[in-house]
Image (cartoon, rainbow, N blue to C red):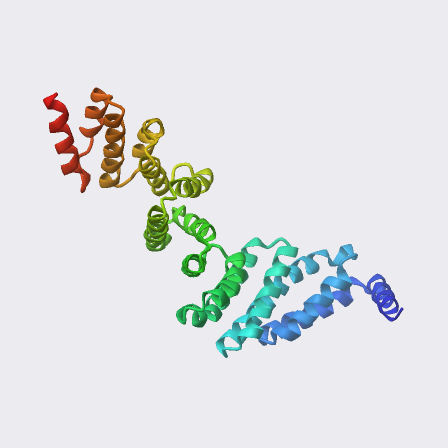
Length: 313
């Protein structure tokens, strides 16, 4: 009843306040903002929005207040961050992002969420550096949700997932980073690709030792369903089919796997695997054609030997 009573008073006040009254409150808000009293300015801008919302004559003031209110909380977040009060900084940046989204200011929302992510990145750093990956994940996930474009933190999140054995989650994050095309992400894109290869090769090696070629294929299929052009998982899958001696499947997928490769040595390796599959199926001409495309990397010498043997026949 008390809440209803207070709300009724507010509604009555809004209905009776003139545009001049709202202007007076707005001027107080602007003065507080100019004096860098961002908390006071926020309170006044909130009053302008609440009391002027249904007043057509105050529409422009309300619109400006909606633009200014998220900025007040953004500035409060910045002040708290300077004094390393991360709790207050996080609270204010989150409030800024929420209000900016509510009032349709996507640019301000992005800026505020960017700082939310940076604070989570700082908070998760100690856990990550001490290899407490479970704690790091619980923190970095919040930051990644706020700003997926914080690729430095995203790399740490992906690595934390992989170290915890959550391979698919880690690969998903690495794929998101690797897909970015803006030049400013170039270094992190390259790092993501390297880490994807590292963790994938480690996992594949473990599964190969266990003879689990079907598991490797299933793992690759999951990733290829999300990104059919993935050079890494095209390669992993083809090698797994060859490992289980499913030469028909290697022949079916070999050309596509080779074409997907961006590295010359990996492309040659795919043609070598394809040539070996043709050879195993006694398809001499096709094997020769495939081996002739092996020109780079460690597979090149083996291809030469295979060609020499085939051309004797």
